[in-house]
Length: 433
Image (cartoon, rainbow, N blue to C red):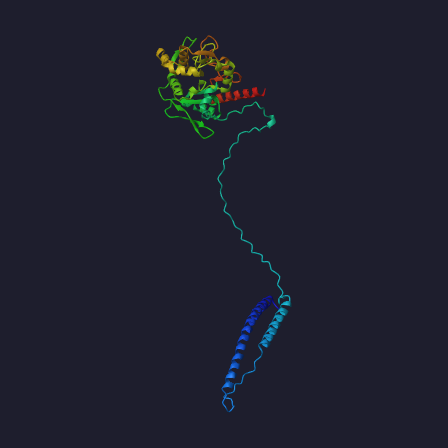
């Protein structure tokens, strides 16, 4: 019985025999040559011996040569051996029996691993998470249910720097709005900024303060910090004055000196004069620039004013008193430059230091010959007299009136917030009609 290893050995033997047979053929050829050389040598030796025999005829020596086979016989015998060896190796290779193991293979036994000992983990104390209170969200209606004429309200004020100077200059309704604030009013201003209300909806805005250091107002969507602009100087003070229609003096805030620094700064920074309208409002005034723009379009004031032919215009906002109340003061671009350029003349002719800022501005514009227009029902200021009697405060304004662009006064944040939401509700209702 042959094994695979034996079969491999036989193949190696067969290779060696083949190699040996090639070597034998080469050796036989050489052997023939040397045998014939030997035969010739023996023949020459015999001739020499015959020639050198003595006269008596006896040989001098005798050489006994062994019998030699013929070279061709040797070759035939070697060929027979080679053929027999080859036939033997081929016979062994052609008869290979299957391999049978002496011992049958044993079945494989599966080893079950020993169970692991249970591991006890120490409890981990997680920090308490503070749950954030989510605002009440109204589900978004389908696209078909959304009116196309609804304007998305501005959640945060946009920076006017995104508009080019030429765009602001050429816009007949561009507005630069500003106010002067004290620390006690900053809560109200921050709410307006955060909710995109009041002056923060104008094309550009400024919040001035008499404090030496700027105060934080809020943060823009791009992360830029909004602060007040400092206009340090003498503070406002209280005095007594006789108002129109009153026979007794009344405590009165004399702040003309503070507001004149604001007007000066607005002109100096070069931004305000780019706009078609420069508007000063009180911190407790709820201004809707959208409604004010509608009033301008209706009155066509932007077509009446021309910088080369007119001295501009301002707006009276209290019909009974025929005056301009300080809750809102609106000057066209031409009136703004004229007022700032020549108000020194007004200061020399008036006791302006003991005036309220709105009275001084109004009197100065009259003195300079600036044209006055009536804004009509566009302003609702409850400090405006309703009759020829003494001026009295008549409570909070009615913020549900649709054609009013400014409501005054709203001293607290809650009052302002309630009024502003009412303005937004009325606007939404008018769009849906």
